[in-house]
Image (cartoon, rainbow, N blue to C red; front, side, top):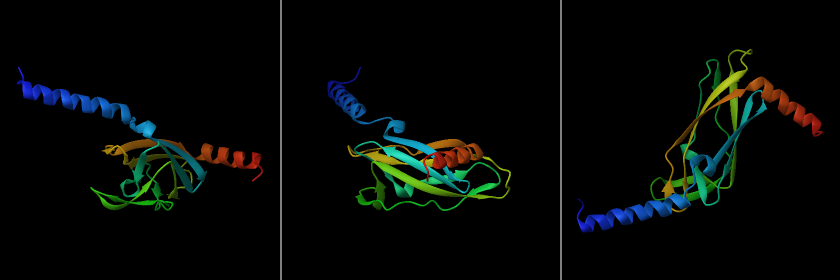
Amino acid sequence: MPKPKYLLLICFLGLINTVCADEVLPPDEAFALTVKVKNKNTLLLSWDIADQHYLYQQKFQFTSATTGITLGQPIFPAGEIKQDKFFGTVTIYREHLDIELPLQYYSPELNKLDLNVSFQGCADVGICYMPIEKTVAIDLVTSSLLQRLDTLLQGK
């Protein structure tokens, strides 16, 4: 049986977890990712970032799991500079983020891509998420055709 002073500590830690659980969103709600084909050679990755949350630019990683398709350097917009107590001076993003990701094909008949995406962010309440890893299956031909059709219908 725990001693009384340890019982108080256990209750206090339980209270902290309850408060924190109410303030911290699940990762998919805090950082909602969508991927679109901008054109045959470029993907557009977008994040809707919840209020009082942010993503670190330095924590993004992208890899192709499809033989014959490699990725170019991601194109990041300007972000907000933050002095982070763990990582030093970093660039962060709040609210919304769009990243363009160039594709390089070694075989023109390739039309599907499995993209591995890794990113990390924090909540302003002082809690950081573990790195988030996702694999996104992308149909490059269908997505590209739908994007062109949408552009034509909008008269652009």
